[in-house]
Image (cartoon, rainbow, N blue to C red):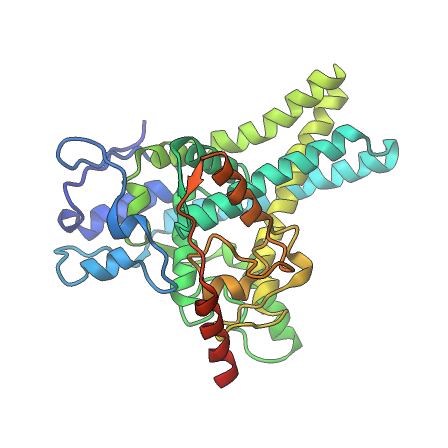
Length: 374
């Protein structure tokens, strides 16, 4: 049934209660109910507009007057064990499914069912991760209708990268400590030399998920914990993953009328899609913090990488992102292909998104001058 979490105000929440909320939120098993004036309310104010490249603005604003400030990190061996099991499943099962898909492709060839299943499912899931989890929920780079928020949250959850509350907590923590001491997936903490570089890249890509500090949801994402819709999606995280596997299988069966069609849909639109989406996402943490060009003088090692721009929907313009983390547009010039920005523009045309945040030409020029003078 889950556990209900009641909080009159953030300042009345003890560290133990905040940690309890974090445990249930980050494992995707919680039912929360925030109570303010007797009714559930969406997040407002600073907590709903976290767009800093440091720590959450709501936390900064409340520090000093909060009777029980939430801890930055959440300590629980139990949650670490759950996250480790989750990662092992995500690392192993999609890999095995991809191998089976490859064997079938070598034996029987690749048809339109497989190609279309993969392309459509990959596109929808990556929009959920990049536009939804990243640009909207983590950085609040635009405003979205309830229908779009729900769709992005469900599609992003289908990537199996962790529940929305956990994912966003980790990402905001990353921006608070990017490539500094405390960054849980930086590739730059392993010394010098080729072996150290390889260890760092592997750690940033996926090794960090075996064992890492857990950012406290009560500290980093109070806005999401106050959002009833997001709490529901977070609670049904595993159902979203299963839905993302079942839909392409059912479509494959409906189109072919055979179990082989269902299997191919399951493999190409399900497991292979998760494998590719996750490794492309993780490559931003690893490759785009090591290889590429720097346009702006950020405090971290972020790079702009041309080769990953299309499969990552623009997030490989990563130095741009760390210079302007709140921007809905990551590709800042026409030649920087940014499919995520195009998706947001489409949502805007459909009246699903509004108030897009973007840096002005003057802001971009000022940041470029910082690199020249450094």
